[in-house]
Length: 375
Image (cartoon, rainbow, N blue to C red; front, side):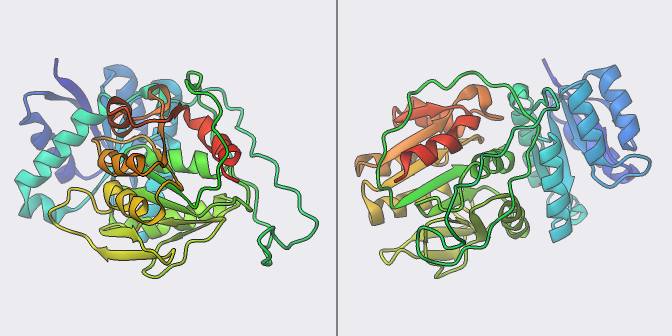
């Protein structure tokens, strides 16, 4: 059965072009179009599409507001179109918080210059997110998840001996309901690195995990999120404002330290060297993912042996599996997000099927277990 799609955009050209591209795929059926957020809500209720493509800047009602209403009234996977600017990144991250599953750059030049490539990418995204786990992206009761209480300290000096100004409490996102975790509490260990890899659904998942960590979290953290180059700086800034730990987009030569999470920059590769610093390398065109989880995990295995705790969160594909295999061979621990709480159970499933997972946890348990595991 064809995937039913609702196309929402105030540009007549873009609506027609997206509709033409999707309709050319026999597995996809465009069942309707809308010119603004209000029409999108009405059409979503009437047509019950499997996927909605959504612009964010529209008259009458913007895309983010429309996504919130759709998630409350008729939860449907939404693919946002975004401009490749800092403001476009910020708005797209807001849309993902509101419930959108994924996003694509809105680039008219690419549509004209590389129609076949655009068609392939757009259709693949639509078909993939049509199979996404709506439970993981559906807002439940409006009661927020309370942020964990700050770790008490006798003064503003952290346990690592440096002055640490108090960071704001994490901003809550609406609660979701997941199945219980399927693994026991983790064993405690002095890990030298926590490495987290993710893709589709990752921005919200990382926010939910990292906002549970205290400012004096005892291990350095590296984050690998499949994301365009224009987006990672804005995403790191967003996480830094929400979390008690510090978060920044990684730069070549940055030193790993407790309480700091370094986000791999989009379009490049991040590796860990023997000095406890990150190396940022140009993105290799032969690799599908820039940044690539396998690359970072593999370098961490070479540098830290059995002292790495790697976590694979929601995402399409199998990136991270081979890097996790190297970590496992060196004696490090591997966790996978459970299927019930994933938006896309691809990357974690690859870890589980390869029998590499030491533990499988629901999303809302991962942050708490990281605190329990790291000493």
